[in-house]
Image 1 (cartoon, one colour):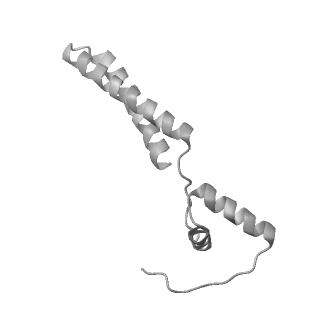
Image 2 (image 1 turned 180 degrees about the vertical axis):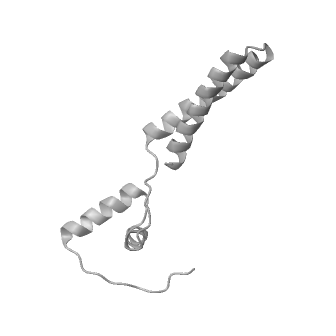
Length: 102
């Protein structure tokens, strides 16, 4: 949908600066930030470098555990495979939380 309408508001200097700071930290333009706030949309900031790094490392761990689990499965070590598989599933859940915030 194209944006053709204009809404003007008056704010204090402090409010304007805070809005600009919050918009920048959320990765949005001031206009989009104001629209999202006014419409009560959830604003999810872009992931931090630490979060991206943690996600990358956890992805490596998940791949390693999956590989180990497959090796153990071929040797019929059922209990160990289940434990490693459980840890792998927990890592998947953490990755989903980091990726989607859910």
